[in-house]
Image (cartoon, helix red, strand yellow):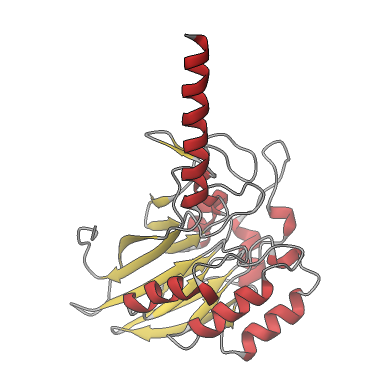
Length: 286
C-alpha cells in the first residue's frame, strides 16, 4: 500500500512538473476596463501592457507574441520593465521584440530592476530610443485622444526600492515628486512603475492608472489563495496579479511573460494585459 501511495505521489509530482514546464510557453490575454472621466462619448483607448519577459521567446523571434499583440490593434503599448536579465542576457531578444512593437503603434517603456542593473544599461536605452521606443527614465510624455489629455510617466525606481521583506525602507509621494514632478490634475495620469508594492504611494502622488509587473503572479498560484511568493520573499503577497482599486486610482498588475530564478510557472500562465480606457465602465470581455 505504501509503495502504491509513493508511486501515485511521484506520478502526480511528475505531472505537475510537466504542467509547470508547458505553462512557460502558453500565453493568455487578460482584459481590463478602466473608466476615464472626460473622454469623448463612445471613445476608447486600448493599451497592451507587457512586463517581465526576461529574454524569453514565444515562437521564433517572438512571432506568436507579436501575432497576439497585433490582433488587439492597440493604440499604444506600455512596457513595465524587466524585459531582460540583469547580466544582459536577453537584451538582444528584447530589442528585437521592441523594434517590431514600434512598427505597430507608439511604445512607452519604463525600466525594471533588471534593466537598471545591466552594465550595458545606457547602450540598451539608447538603442531603444533609436528604434522609436519612448523610454521614460523618470520622464513623461503627453498625448491627446478622444478629446482627453493623457500623460504617461515612467518611474526608474533604482535598486534601493526593491527591498526584501525584512529590509526597512520604501518611497514617499514627495520622493516621486522630486524625481518626476507632479502630474497635471487635468490629465489622466498613467504611471509605469515596475514594483507594485507602493500602490498607495502612487495614488497619493497622483497616478490615475498604474501599470506594474515584477511579482510574476506570485511565481506559483493556488486556487482561492492566489500568488504564493513575491520577489521580496513575501508569502501570499498583497498584490500578485489582476486589477486593484484605491480611491480614484486603479492598478493593473500583470503576471508577466517570462521566468527568472524559478523556471516554472505553476497555474500561472504568461499574460498579455489589454486595458481598455473609456468614459463608461463596461463588463470585461472574456
